[in-house]
Length: 85
Image (cartoon, rainbow, N blue to C red; front, top):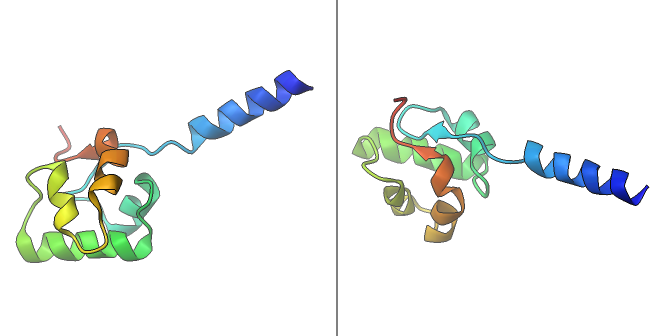
């Protein structure tokens, strides 16, 4: 039983991992689903910032968005894409 619970826990952790997302083209709903610590409001702020200031040049540029901290960027760095290539 203990092994079964460990396996279920590991599978749950894997399924909760974020998927890589292109922050320069994704909509707010997709961003909020893909990035840990980014809910609907932050994701909408990311899209609004992008529309006002242009594409993000680096993952670190996300920290310029109000409500997005450097910690959030670091937590998601591997899942933040700047293009679809």
